[in-house]
Length: 423
Image (tube, one colour):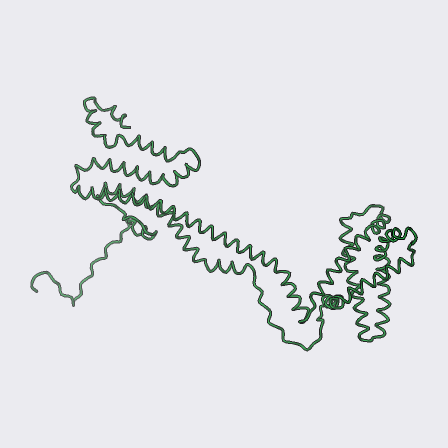
């Protein structure tokens, strides 16, 4: 630009023009080099670092250099040069402080962002831990709720759980022993091979309740014997015989058939089990299994099972004042209440983050404006640094919005008129 201007100047004046343009002739090339240096880089990280950290302070430096060099031409025509030079030096001091505060603000904002991220991660981890803890505590709470709604104190939980586990295991064993026979029967009826993945769960579910029903029948017979109810004893004995017959024929017989080859091998084919021997061994097996399980845990767990199904208490003791139930706490209540309680804190932190993002940039702009205002009025417009957004709003001048001065108050008869002389 300087060289294009010199082209219009006569040759005899070019030396004087070169001398007068010395303060600003070097700025355009240096300005372009600095902008290119701050705008481009060899990698994305370098470009982001330069544009975020260095670009705005460098732009302030460039604007200060331009205005300062141009203001040198106004010094011979100024009346109060000392005040102008002092104001210009003060503007450079404010520019340096503003650049430093800009970098400090970036560091503070980065620290605040890391703290917020860490706090959100801790909150998320607390909520996940509460959900996991609630998930693992749900079965225990379900048992506690069941005990408080179905039973009175003294429920044999160990026997009840042992009965459920034993019935499930016995149903699983009989499912594998009965599955080939049932598959053959269903294939003969339908003409298609049944799907084992669908047949096995249905068969296990059916056998599980059959085993539980067998314990219930033994419990009903024992209750009839305890009460010496003759009619009940005869009825339950009759029913128990049919239960025994069903389980022996369809379940326990399969176990005896499984060990028949072993018996024949051990006796060198000398002992062949017939129908009567197979049914007797199966009956002895049913009586032995039911007897052992009944006297171990069945006689204690079966009443609890029947009470659960009938929704009755298993005891008829005098009523006792129920203990105060423990207040169930929502696992997400604690983190949510904490988040609500800290809403004001979040608002303050949001305002702090806004100030940390805004004040460093605005101070750089204010420092650049101060250079221009010093050239015009020999004094800066803003007093830097800004400590908060409120300070910035107060320091911003309201040009053209000044309120008119109030009219003079009219005199009353009681007030004397002072003219400066004798009355």
